[in-house]
Length: 119
Image (cartoon, rainbow, N blue to C red; front, side):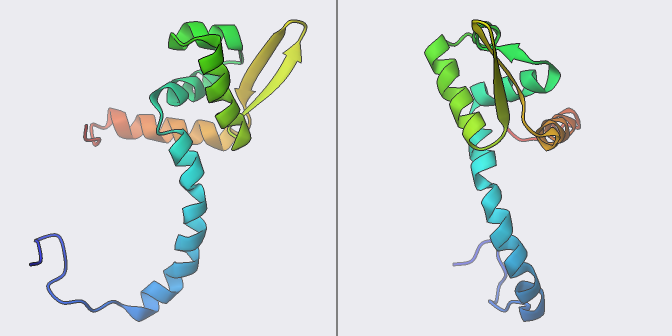
């Protein structure tokens, strides 16, 4: 039985599908970024790093996480190219690795503020 959310008859537009298929395949490569950002703590970290360079201790205090937990989250963000680090004396500082990450966060906030999200 078909719902109101599907076509009543299966018939696709071959020209459009063929044109979009390569782009859709490439878009699938975005999944690791969105998977990393699907975690509440990592979103907090990325948002904070978009505002300022922070040391690991700052991030732990901000998120309420332990240093090992913060280190785990930062490793994930660093491995997919969302964050970068630098060592200064006894401290390790993190920052956004690509300005596009800030744009993603800002666009998401704009969406949130428009009230178009669903919880």
